View (cartoon, rainbow, N blue to C red):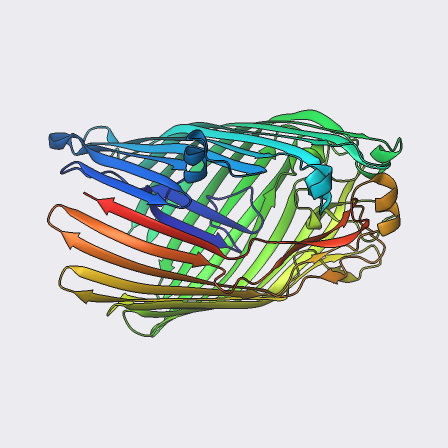
Length: 559
């Protein structure tokens, strides 16, 4: 939804979160929009195989340093479709717009008003029976989605403190219908899925400086969550609901999260201590979340030990399934020991050992393999209880050389275990236990007068995730994929490998800059497994692969 044209800074937090963040178990991405130019009008136009990208920015009032930034995108496929180009059985279309208005003021602080909106469509037309090669070919699938957001942030200093406050409203709607061409019994005749989410949120943060070595921060975030979901399936099998129930309902409530944090230097030690309280009025579930870290500098090394508890609400489809309305928040106690070393102005190394213990995880009584730790977007069982446990632990390393001397690189890797506990006290592999992950990113640019040529590469290599085995007999009976819980997540995908390559050429001229780039994702065309499923047409278990080689050619002009 947000083009790189409008993004400024993105912070990523994993493990023990600062007290101002909540309702997340694994991590937080904090994204901010950049302000527009306060000096002159600037324009960007980019055309690629994916879409058109247009941006404009400039001053609103030069004397007051206020500015605006607007970005609009439209899919290339959608544009060509409007011109009559036929793309066969499947068409994809999207468009989105985002903006950021900035109004600095000595009296009223800095006010930012931002917003975004977008539409997406995907339509697949069932093929003639003579062309059927897989299950999907006999379905007409119509998907439509939309998202929007509007809000403001105001930052000011009344003298004794720094104050930030803001509010926003956002919404997301997804609708998918799937209708099959009639084939021999059994099969799914049709499926309907609709999800509508609305969030009205606000925050207040007050920061007071005690001295040159101490800071107090207090704040509160409140979000009114209104989520509605309606899912229905029509099947020739009367007992189908036993395997995949139809669900419909609304989950609405206020998620209130006040917090307090104290940061203080004691000689070479830096202490951060805080607490966050979470209350979800939908079912009055709550959580007290202490968070503390102690850091010390030794020469060019920074050592940090930290502990924090965090929690998260359940997914909408979980709450609206029978017997699940009163489930507790899932919680995680997270311990981390981190080492940072800056070898020079450009080379940084970060390494950490972590352990996360999850509790109050929804599980199904009597089924030792069922745990909502493993939930993705699937639908849960009914009558769950918040008595499950799990754990994640491992070691990760990150090495970065910043862009200096026309060369940069980043290397990261982790070895980890992700597990859940069965009723016998034994830890078992979770769906997400790939055991390791690694990435390598590098690039170099050559400058010659007003021309810049760049080559950039990225390699991703990680352990394959897991899934339950497919029960072929039941799948054949109900006419869709049914998974077998008896042996746990024993099916492990092959390791994931994807190399990406980017080549760019930029020419700077007085008043404008031109850039031609070629991005090739998965340049080797490797077939990475997405999942295993039962194909009702072929009547066998098949592999669904992720996207293969994706070339993207783009031409950009900045003026």
